[in-house]
Image 1 (cartoon, helix red, strand yellow):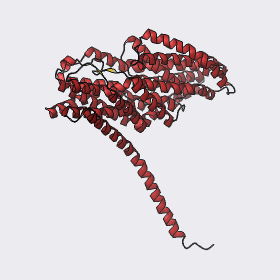
Image 2: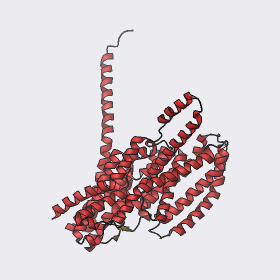
Image 3: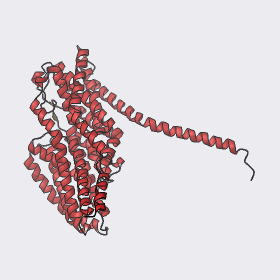
Image 4: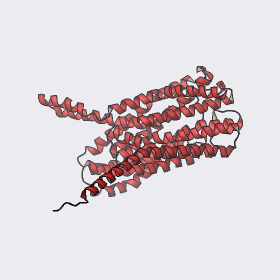
Length: 493
């Protein structure tokens, strides 16, 4: 066959076009984070401009505009970091795609913030700073500004390194640091700070214990039964009813406080009623859904999939209702001080401030949330729908228990603690099974420890990173806030 005289130039052209195509793909990959940063910057700028338009253009308005911009920045970071705790388990268990999780979370977070977000917020973060110690309204405004900036920067840094941290504790640390810089150590309510510090341990341990207990229950009563499907028909409706009752109680206490205030006893009665109704509704549905399923664990995952999606949506709604105050609480305090010339431990949140918080959380989730969602959902330990269900249920139950005991807890610590609890329970359970299987033979006793060392079901590097980030959140945010306050006050003076 004669050689094509045009073959060589055409091959060269193909290679050049291929290089150009690869360069375009690489450029698109590199520029993708820049698009997110650009959209975030535009939203922050828009928040500041909205404040200027709302209040006019005097000197006090410029401070409010700067606070609105930093409030938007904080809301974006909350969406990027905190929301992963609600959606991560469902995504890790393959009950939701990443796109579906982001869409559901964005809608539910915004709805929770706008419909059920608290219209009165404690701007001094649960009384950790005595307002009487900060007598000058101008000093108070700069302290709140420093708290807002430092907490947002700390959450941003934690998101960058892949550590889910408590935005509540970040704000607490920011307010504490600014208060110390403004009025000294005596301005801090140290007993309250001690209680918050205790919650660093109580939250994850309690969340992990509840999640592990539910997983042990599911394994004993469903997974290890000879007829798994028959056992699932009995217990899955009960577990779904428990979930419905717990979330009804949780949302009654936490998510509806703007509409109506409900005490714990009334919320528990509402939860029991919802649980009973849910049981009788879901039992025939589960029986119908289980017909024709094979007697294996994969079939059980199907039965837990839809309840897991609903639990993730409800957690997002409650999170939006409660944690939007972390973004806009200091901003609301600055707005109040600017308008009335004084400051208060409790202020009303204007609707435009709530909108900044709600949309900022949604933007942060959409633009930067997938990194933490993947880490929480699949990189700490492997989750399936049953394990993820236990994590979601433990988050709601632990918040209710903590409210009953009067303990300030972090939803982030509870959710991630639940994941750790599930993972460490699996390790303990695997080691127990291997000990039983090791037998009396010397070679079996030698193989079992090697296999146990290999079967570490919780990634230790993530465990140490997250725990370290939790420990230093309050002091790090406080230190940053104190430095920022000193700079701002020096510039203002």
